[in-house]
Image (cartoon, rainbow, N blue to C red; front, side, top):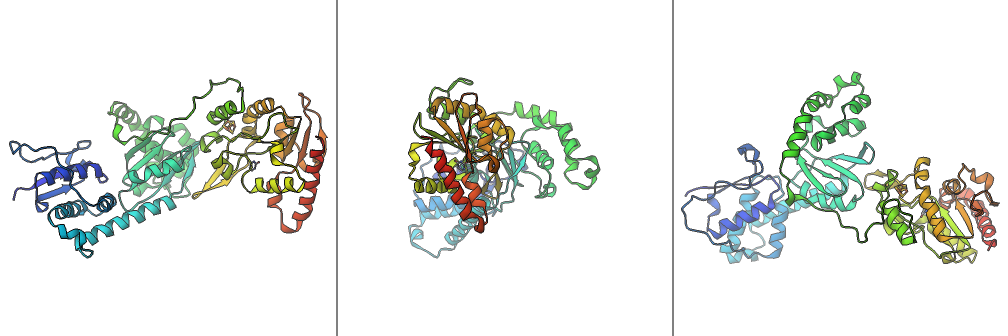
Length: 479
Ligand code: SF4
Ligand code: URA
């Protein structure tokens, strides 16, 4: 029997397998006569899809008919194809062949080939789940995050869209021994694997990760001086990663050139969603809260903007008696796009309800418009905005106050108080009275932030709650 060799474009080339299996089935090529290989590099075929098609001069082949297989098998096949088992292509092509030639197969729950394929699919799904659960990002170089992960199967491409959606606003890369993937906020890019023997330890400094990151994705970005500064020479001899630095820097120019000259690979690109509304012109003063929302959403004046899901501007009536200002959106506000919907917001709601003060009588806003957090595993832990971040955001708050035109401002906590008064404020010392030092004449009342109450030990909470209610009642009186 003449043998047919089929070479796929890499281990995760499911598309290629499907196309080629269809062609072989259409030609009636027996499964026992096909040798499958996914090791394109070994054959010097990087980038080529197929070779060794059946001998030229054979009968012309019509467009391959799609084999009719049960939908459940197609899904099973999609998963099993990503397994590390080298025989998977042979197994799955044999199953496709048998499904076409042995009608009884689809009713046999104990067929050995089918059971094996199901097992492979299960193991791949478990690996996909593990990657989602256990990828841990380390922050490097500003807003970039890098993770190292060792999947058992060829799941990087299949899992990348999940991470893209989950961390859409972050710039990240996941490095694995076989494939690496990077999200720059607009596109997913895939690169070759990273070397397991030189993997940075989980607690490695940022520069080690950065070395990796640069190595895999963008030699043009290699910042040698910065790396030298961050990785003192005396440590180099102990660090396997240090060995990368010189060769990397030497090769960087060449690799950049190669990268620029390389043809694009459009088939693997996934675009970020297109914004639903056109953005206002940069630097233009927003004329409405909607415009403010769009403009703040696009703002990257401080590093927080790139990490958050969306900017969260305030809500409530215009020209209200009071505008309450908190610190910044939390996790739930970031996802909902609305202020004070999480635990702190619920406490504020309870306090206002106690006072018979309708929430929709006030305009509720935050001093900082984007959520700042630190990743711990998959959890986003709230971090207080730094002073320079609050300052970067002050312009948005000023625009918001100008658009809302409240008669008075209530600062919840120190960040809001400082943003509204333009100076450091000790909340405990200055709470409970109206301060009239703003140049626009708007009076400012300072009190605690609800989160501060949530953090208090049990034995202090009742007194703090009573005092907070008294503060808020006082603030409300100025109606
Ligand atoms: Fe801009 Fe404020 Fe967001 Fe920072 S937090 S990016 S300053 S809107
Ligand atoms: N804390 C704030 O300061 N603002 C919110 O919107 C939520 C929690």
